[in-house]
Length: 133
Image 1 (cartoon, rainbow, N blue to C red):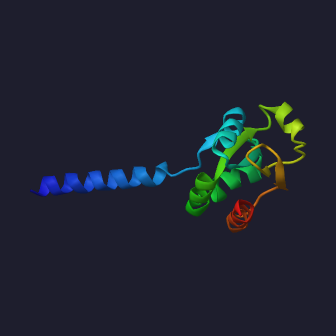
Image 2 (cartoon, rainbow, N blue to C red; image 1 turned 120 degrees about the vertical axis):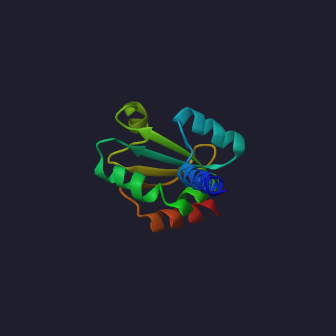
Image 3 (cartoon, rainbow, N blue to C red; image 1 turned 180 degrees about the vertical axis):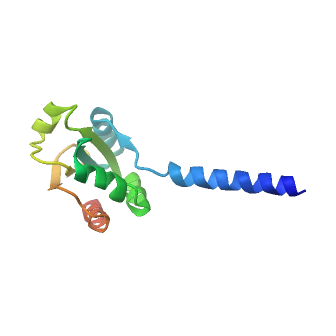
């Protein structure tokens, strides 16, 4: 009986931990994301970053892991993440001058607005909600 109970608790904890860690932003490649946004008539969040960028890493750790941001972004936007070192042409096409660079667009790719630099999680969520309206 005790072994069954311990096994049951183990599986419950294992399932709970995997469900929590599975919640993350559904990032798309540029091509895939633009097509998905157009087909689903969803607004676009386009994020340019680089692995060496301190503030890009902070956004990944502090903003893009925030459950409310994850849920809202996944429900209302198509999220696209572009490494500006690996895709310099695209970064130039969007006139990226510093990192991180966050852009918000209509489903057809028309620019709504952009915000350079680190965006704290509360501000980021406020921006997403105001753009979604």
